[in-house]
Length: 292
Image (cartoon, rainbow, N blue to C red; front, side, top):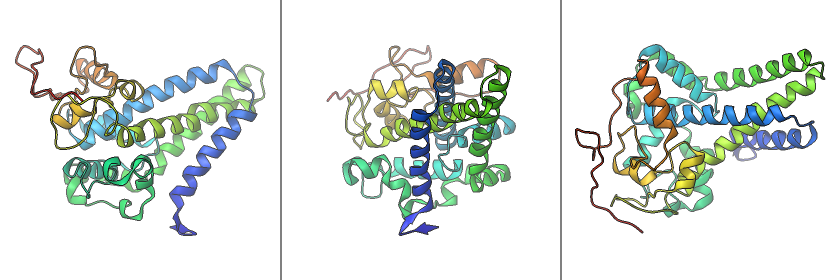
């Protein structure tokens, strides 16, 4: 649906930012809100990187059907549309990285379009089901992809009611607490996750170092890796797309990989795919290196 030539999603995106900033300024602040923001951001980013990206886009590990559904649900709580749409378009990005067919190449389309403009482009609203047929065969994922607003809406309601309950139990204004939880535990978290994940598209092909001679301009960037739990090791990733591990040097922090490894120890995550330059002992063997 379009309004004045722009998609409804664009206006919703602007509304989320406006409401979050207004509420953050006007509502009384509580130290608990900051803790809620940090925890929700961290785990929300994990489901973006571990779910949307490393699982549904690249199949870098395996999940059972129920954990797969939970991963999809939690990923969509971040309001970045359906998992099938996300993964299909991301697979296209790797297929055409930094060429004219790349949906969000800053090299070809500039910073702002790569950062967020492509999301509202009518040409980006659909996807080819054949590109994601491996997951499109699951009816529950097709349902979630079609009704992607359900998980994030329930997430927002949970934060609101948790805030209401907390305010009531602590003899504070329950409605102010509810909106405080909603603002710091949902709206501001969404905004931070949006901008951090968008930076991988817009900045990780421009700023940083290149270890591997890939056919694009992907780069490793340590501070992007920190705010996205490991996604900033982007040149590593473009060199070995199937690897679950993106920070492949010991000092390249990759929280997403660490959490997935923990889940593998209790049998939820299985068959983690390694970086292809690893030998049988698990040590990393350098390939041809290009540093810029």
